[in-house]
Length: 530
Image (tube, rainbow, N blue to C red; front, side, top):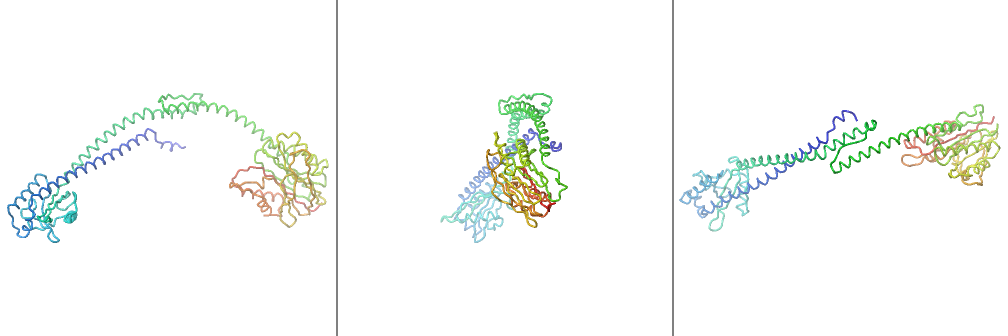
């Protein structure tokens, strides 16, 4: 990680303080909102109770049977003056914004009494807000009404309580209205909110500070010590200084510190062992490199192998799955007129397979050079390899000896892949026939052989199972059908080009998937005899 990115890292102390401040803010805000809401509702409720009590008292003093007379004559009497005085005194005593009485007349509302307005009788009440009109209409229908808070152009923000006035027949003839000013209550609520918020913030900060101090002493500082000690662990290992951090919290942090101490000791032991293993691996790697070179040197690698002979073209290759493979191929002249071709695959991989391969290759070649037929060479090799084969390894072999004068040959297949043959001017096809068991499975096993004949221009392609069983990332096999497609992309090409086409087909198919088996191929073309 770059230094610029490291510089942007926040400490656990800073993160915790930030989280604590955020928590304090949320707690303070939440507590203030809850307390303010409860206090506001309580104040509105108490104010509404006072307003309704005033309106109810006024309604009880008014004689409802006189309302219609006041509206008709516009004349005032002692009862009228008494109610006017009551309304005026209520305004002063309770600090009301507005106190009035009006009666519904058709679609209009007419004032009968209005605090501070001695000439209000008969005046149209056109200063009522929409909220008040809605409350009045509901009241006249007999619907219960609550303390309604509204904003009016004339009186500002106020709460309204309405109380009906009944005549002797029980009919609503007028309505008493009490408007209570709300700004004073709002101001009181704001003051209360500030006090409550201040107390909550103070208590939260005080409690948070104590909590932070406890966390700092029991968590943050031990973690900082542990972080510093672990950061120096690698350099301390190089300087041979053991891990040591003084943490005594009697909890998981102390256990964690002890675990780091144990990890430091285990890491030192692991490094010492790793140094030994690395040295051993380097030694083995060097030996494997030598073994790889020896194995490669044992396989014919000079092409064309018989530059003076124009009657044959031959090319072979092996791509091991590991440093040392178990596949092998071989070709050599038994005499001037006979060519031996060998393609084999040893079970297993690595050094054991390579050692088994060396023995098998040597035995097969020696048998053929002494004049044995393919079946006899396999039988002799089988008996010698099976004797004392405690590792239970075996080798599949395709073996042929071709008379270069006539093109006739004898082949034997010991559990190996079927070869592909191309006749001149045609395409490669698999030559499928029954084959024998693999070599080294059991002593005394018989091996079959069969005759074949190549005409000028014919080609022969042999391979190990690493070709057909090359596996893609989707766990799909390359298969012989794709192999034949690659072979027949240029069926008349020379042997080296044929092998290149097959290898390209395998690589395009498996892409980046790991190679699990050796890939070994040989292509032989028979030309006009010399």
